[in-house]
Length: 182
Image (cartoon, rainbow, N blue to C red):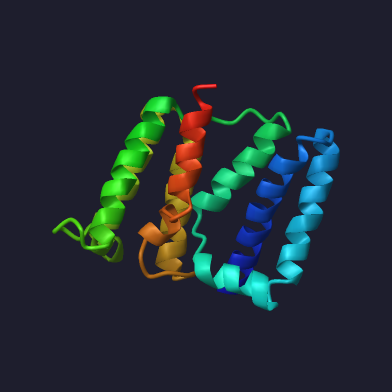
């Protein structure tokens, strides 16, 4: 299951990037077709040295990063999805920066270790779902619950944070924050 999940995540992420670039010169449907072909090619080449090295470096992709990418692809096709506000992006970037500092030992408390224990994970999923209910962002609740399902089933990492967070989320959120002002 881990290989299938990584392959699907890789295809979605490559398609997201290719569609974003292709929309500069192509119509939305043509950009989507090119993106789908690029995603399929990336999966086919994932056993090769270059793409395989990128997959090894970026794995596990988790649930959140591919969900954001898929949401980006669907939004460009005109599907109405819940958005993320500027304030939410700022709070996320600040919180994720503290989380990364904790993971790298810059901050004394190790927040990452909470992702291994059932009770803290259940509490974090409930908090995310509560926030999603209050904000109307059902997609966030879906990602949290699917991440917990994958974590419980051990379809990848033994840490729940690996499904919810990814190192690429920081630059993606920073770019989205800057883009929100334009």
